[in-house]
Image 1: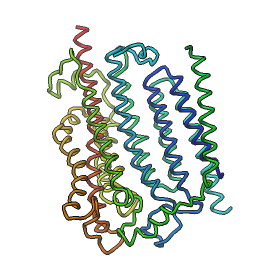
Image 2: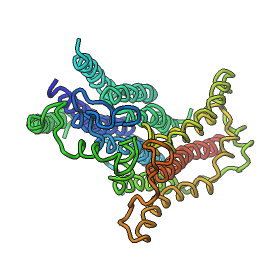
Image 3: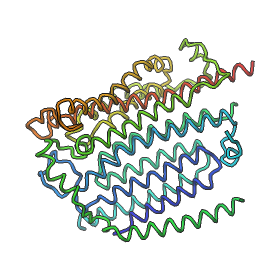
Image 4: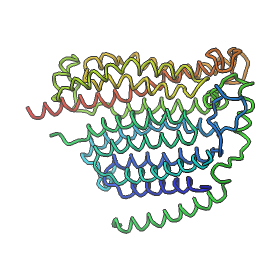
Length: 114
Length: 84
Length: 259
């Protein structure tokens, strides 16, 4: 349990990269990029966790509890929302590539220049 | 069982499910199926963040990863479909 | 290079990556033993300094407000980039803009009554929940980013219920662009106002309130969170709108080619 979440992070990264390398479809490649990015959220929250800690909200508990780290949660929070917008931009690139070249296979797309 | 042990078991279970979910997302090749699998993966991640004592990140991941992102993906897939 | 060779190259690279990861994780202090001084330090001083009980939002909009400003502008740029990338290619004309004609052009099955009732009933509560989340950042787990996305979801529900005409009328481009600009620019303006009062950029200059966790507490946190909520909602509705407009354009080209 000391190191298990980090092993899961490494697994997700490798699986996502494997999907990107062996993909024959641009849309599938973009989704594998999302999977790789989700591993960073798990890593951030795993680093900041305190055993026996509560969520860092002081609304109805004593003012000095033993709480998990709030800074990494703030980073992960904005990250999640911004990732969706960037993925939408990537998908629009894929849509334009399909309109221009008629195919979404990365191996075929690599042959076109310019 | 002490509360710490219960939390440990819960976290290990959800972590294993998330690892399996990532593998399933990567191995899905059909596009329409990918949308549903991605939505399920987003919900699993939300449960993981909840178990890691992060309710704010859970809210974000639920709204974005399980709803908005599959919708954007579905619309993009609809545009690159071969016209029937 | 064949695909087998590519796979072997990837396996080599992945092995190196995993070795580096394991070496790095061995140096971490273990899961659950977070030692760092930053987190506990903030937890100790947040009530005294900002009177806000939602510590994550306080960190997001006050202690690390500058980073959040950057992230929000990433969102803004992504939405603007989509409008540029999805511009009409030469050879595609815009069809007649009467919404009824567009709705008649679509050959889709009508949505079932159950779906329509449920989605239309949920539009109101979703919008209210999104608004509530965007304005209560300093008290509970909520904040501008979550509330904005849920507010955008309320718009999508209208699209899902099959009311395409209403959906197009609910998305006037001028209003969306204006609200996105107000959200993004407003955040920057709050910081600039602090500079105008000869304080550091993004300093918390509004009154902090007396009751920790009440609506009036937190100073600029509530204001910034509200502006961020507006901006995120407008950006997401714009993004979905861009993708939807493309579908309508393609149907026009296809029906022209087949006639």
